[in-house]
Each structure stands twice: as C-alpha cells, then as structure tokens.
Image (tube, rainbow, N blue to C red; front, side, top):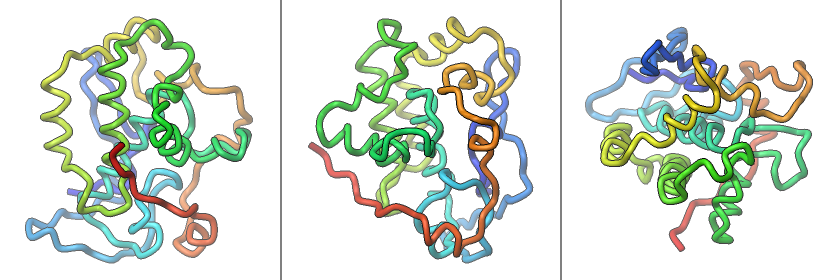
Length: 210
C-alpha cells in the first residue's frame, strides 16, 4: 500500500519506540507490477515527490521520497519548508543538496546534537535521505533496501533521541522543541491542489556522487 502522507505527525512511537504509521485517509493500493496510477493530488506540501506534485503519479517511490524528507527534518531539527529562513535555506531539501555538493553535509545537523553523535552514522542517515530524494523515482531505493542498510548499523540515532528528548509519543513531538520558534500560523501545512503546487515548486536537480 502507498500511504501518500508520510510526515512526522503521522509517525507515532509506542513505549518501546517502535514506529507506527497513522492517518490512512489517502492510502492507495500498491501494484505488484509497479504500475503507476494518476490521481488527484492529496497530501502535505513539502513531503510529496516532484512527479506526484506535478503529474499526480503514484508509486511506492512517493513514500520513499517523503521518508527522505522526514530523515532530513529529524537530523536538522528543521521544517521542510520555512519561509523565515534565508533564501538558500527555505527549502530543506535544496539546502541539503547544496551542502552535499560543497562537501559540508554535516553542517545540516541540529546544533543541539553537536558532540553527541557519530559522524559516520549521521552521514549514513543524511546520504540515505538524499538518495530517497532523487528526482528520478527509479533511482530512489526501496524501503526494504533502506531498512536493510540501517539494520546493518547501530541504533545510535534513536539512542540520542531517547536521551535528549525523553519519552514522547511521535516524531513530531520529539522534534518540537528542536525547531526554531515560529508562529503557529506559519507552521501549519495544509493540503493544496496540484495547480497551486506547480506554481511554487522549486527547480529540482538530481544528486550526483562526489
């Protein structure tokens, strides 16, 4: 199944920090033959993929893209779109790509985590996020591949979250006090139509290995 609205607010954590996906109002059935389906746009701005935003194309790689955005938000403590930031930092994905191309990807890490993380593992998370955010959906990994990659490494990121944030109920809660103080109105992210998004979507460039 394809969720179509993966974001921190829809990822709940139980007492053992096992993630549970919530809000299945936009779910579409997955197709075993990898057939793409065109539907009316639904979801949350900033989290859906360019092919979905501009053409309404749905595949499992839509949720992979959204997951990549969530990873960037967790590591950076930033909203995926924040108009109170400087121009080059408004869109988290674009900022991350610019830092990647300059070889400064660790500059994206939340300042609250400085000195409390393993650089190699954080780079693994960030580079995995960017692989999920590639423009061409065929170049994005599957979620099974992402899971396999993460399972091969220690759960450092989750341990840091537990130590710094205590017992919360969702990824949104965990990130809440790491975000810059912004007005409630600017933080609200609502469903928008395909035409509205097309007029605002930034020019997306593919990620190329250094």
